[in-house]
Image (cartoon, rainbow, N blue to C red):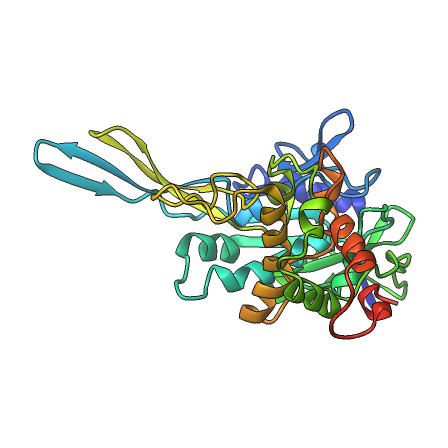
Length: 345
């Protein structure tokens, strides 16, 4: 037997959660042609179909763009520090794509490696994620190339699969999910079916071999010559997590904050001495790919990518993980493994 919930009942739940003080996030059409994960003020703002995926990611629910770490104030010779208000509000993400939810257990590694980030962990603890399996994909999607699928449950507390009649099969993957939907579903014999995902475009292990064996290959600047260094790929990626810590204010008072940063920015690796080890955009693109398919797997045992395609979809010059790696596979000899493996065949 399966558990079923109607779209109407799901919207009613959203309408109950919001006035109860829960922060609810979900896909919302912010303007014609643009769907974003955003805070919902009313249940009818929730968009559940009619798009491939939002242009941003749900990482900002647990890793916000701007976060105050503490405040400071100088009074005479006395310096006083103040902590921000403790995080206490429950958060629910409704309608996330599986490739977004899968980013959360990947990000858990870096925020709990040599230091446990209490801000990140508290948000993770307060957040419940309801995903909707992908009914379609576009040319930018490549989740199957990194071990995921349109109905992958990783990182989801509840996975919804459209039954085609205004209702979903609800698969509760965690105790959080079971608690959230307890008494809200109906039993049924119907099982949701998900269309096939995109054909695999490459094999991550072979890609790793290409990257590690061709660090100085002149093809990297050629492939990435048109990169503008705008950071759209990193900012809309579910797994990119670079940040900077800065003081905002003046000598008398202010706050120390954590702000998003990106390895594609020219100043990202600028040293205090004035030396910059990555002065060219091709070097920065190479670093991004090495981080995702070599450095992170070496450190944490998994690829730093969920195949969402946002990097290419949002790039003003159509660059991204998939486009660069497919060209690399075609033009750089594979040093370990077959060419067919690199292409995902």
